[in-house]
Image 1 (cartoon, rainbow, N blue to C red):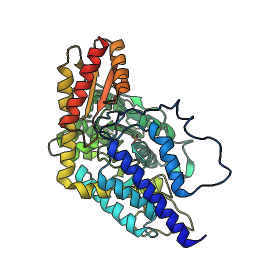
Image 2: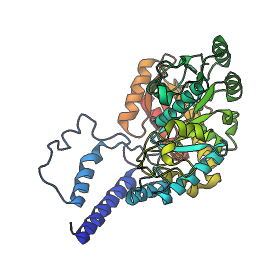
Image 3: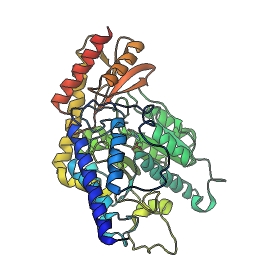
Image 4: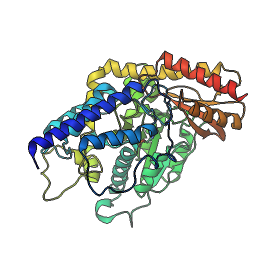
Length: 463
Ligand SMILES: *Cc1c(COP(=O)(O)O)cnc(C)c1O
């Protein structure tokens, strides 16, 4: 391969990528949020025949952009409220490009000292911002699901080890029966993580109408079998209501019973970074492990989740690797001792970039801005005749319903097709709802006004 030519190809392809990225980002605020072409229409746009021969890299990038662009959802728009999706901070997006160019396999501190060191600083900053115990292990995962998995596996192994059972050697067969407790509104991601971890489905101990765990129910469940090895999963930020479990009481009971306590705080853990909203997570720092996302509230590009475990050695015992060819331990756990992967991109670098760009005050302002936008959305929706906001808006989630389920379902369809906004339809307490999750730092007063206006127009169009 001709070196110079290869460099030229790389330069040309990257220039095309930057051009297409700019074109996309330039249109993001004003284009319709929904894709122009749905999944049914995409096969006709993407040639499915495996090409016999190759193409120039820059031309491949042009072909890719042309094929995919009509099928792109404007997820980075300030009026996209589906799932829980943040935009991308400029520093984080640009850092992500660099991460790809550097292409450092950041599993090991020895082989990727530059990116490993930046990730370690990002981890320490996260602990400080989120009010988590100093010295906890921080792993950068693909998302909160794999962060939940990393934490639950560590919890599982730890409570079984205390009963003399080493899962790493003996597996789960013959282990004491593990108890996995959660509130009724436990997120499906925790359920999935528990399933993969061989813990079975969580036993639901009850919950209130906002989705908070029933603490009395937890107490009863713990007392029913005081000697059972137990993992309790709590929640910071219910996907529908945004509600937070009563951590102080729940963690106190669970720890007194010798349980491992995990907190799924995919977006809600970030309340801790705001002096105005930290009260929502009071006592949460008493848990053993925490999962959150950076690709939600912090607005770094996909994908980036965070697994935090208080006991570093426990995390390394469950997730660490030992093999003859791997660079030896340096006393400090390697990145691959904190995630379920060996090879991995340096995804934590985007966290460093976002935190460096925002600073402590900027992160607090980001969280406060999201909550303010959600509060304003709820007030605006509530003023529309026949629209009710069903949840107590304590954080970033707003669920609305129209006069009946059919009208609410139609409103959701109308909004998504009209294109000014995109919000998910869901079911909550047996009712059809449209759910707005505010997670983009660009969702300002103007975006809120246009969103409320779109709902108003939708209601008028349907009646
Ligand atoms: C989004 C979310 C998850 C899953 O996170 P991923 O990053 O999608 O894997 C888990 N729990 C809650 C509460 C969430 O909102």
